Image (cartoon, rainbow, N blue to C red):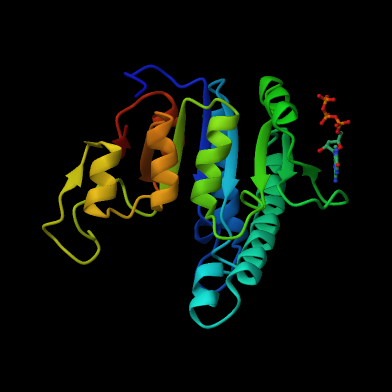
Length: 237
Ligand code: GTP
């Protein structure tokens, strides 16, 4: 936990769905708002890496459930994250931020390859590094990629931006009496089957003592608040 102190280096996990509006996979106004929030947070001096999902464009797991080969559908999902990464890069640069996109799948004409030491150097220089193509492996989610990259860049925390303001004992959209947890430990999340991140991602964080803070992205200013150590959302540690 930050113990109320600001974090120095964070890994922000954004879902692909956060960029869309139901009609369009990428809504420029929403993208611009996310850009403003990230810029405001970055201005505090934090070093930030971002892993973005691809579910607004293509969901590997959903496609494989309908009969598509799982590895092929996961690769399609990884390509979707690359589209989102370029969109996010554009939005962040419009807010005056310096960014680099690094892809786990080689596409040198479009993005730098993922090179851990180079990513860290970019962060030290104040650039936001957007990690595209997940971990580059099928059967792993972008949440797991976020946990992996967070550890590789020695981030203090994973900031998991979602549509709700923390983790509840049941779906707060469907149950009025849903109760929000302020803190949880990893094993509780796994045992209770709470939908924070998939179990591979949670296990990886647990084994490496990497805290996760989940919070609502839709509330403007939340990224900055979390980075400054304000207690919002739910902390898993
Ligand atoms: P420093 O040398 O630390 O200042 O980093 P830098 O990223 O500014 O230098 P570099 O010369 O590596 O990159 C200059 C620009 O080219 C940046 O916008 C990079 O994102 C981009 N770039 C670097 N390598 C690649 C690559 O393999 N593919 C693509 N598409 N762009 C690259």
